[in-house]
Length: 367
Image (tube, rainbow, N blue to C red):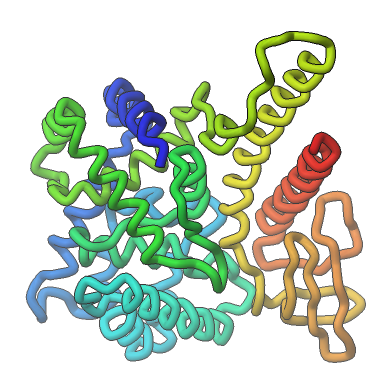
């Protein structure tokens, strides 16, 4: 691992605390408020609330942007689905996702996967057109952290993969079926160990916390916030990726051939850095699956998305299966319930994919 980069990012985080924790600017401390509120409300004695929905709404009132965003609002969908099948939704949370992990990341991942699979079946059954109600690994990880904060870590693919690349973490977190929660937790463990070496940061951090915040002595929430802020606040700027630094260097004699090699090396490193940023952004979109979402089309009627590759969707209608490219520039496409938002995000997804492929071709030509 490349610990120099990790400690450099931690130092930049510490120097930015007034900006990161200031309510007028970013207010990243909302995560610790959300944790405190959830644990105070969710664990109140039986009989404190009339229903699961009342308990859930009280517990999530300080979530803010923890998992819901302008396009996705999975926590809002929980109560909607509970209204349809209360016993099933309660079972998925209490008996599947939030069952004790007993220190096993593998067991926790099984719980997460089972929850996501069965929850998605419910969403498809009652809200097939509302893709914003979908749960993903990020939202599931938030719920898990809220209930076992000393074991779990919040997961966001783009933040995790970018951190792993800059500190040269030797194992792949993976994605989709290859995703490993255990590997991700090992990465987070390395970050926590590094954080504990920065006592001045920890003193400042805990000084910022008040009675309305959860005092996360495990530093698990701080590890996630470091990854998130490093990505969104530009803390990697100017840092070299270890993989690029290990490349063979040119000799000391600066003849024309050497200079050309150095120029190509510099160009390649710049492209690799740009590619890493694009791929980190791409991870955010990969979590967005439209499989099982209901759409409508003037010539074909109502259909269900059965296949997706980036912004290419195959829809099964009553009469036939049709593949569409979803983009603002493509008038021939099906319509979504939240059509403007869906088309916006799929257009961005497609453009990002095309840009990644373009950079990869340039790198291949330089090899």
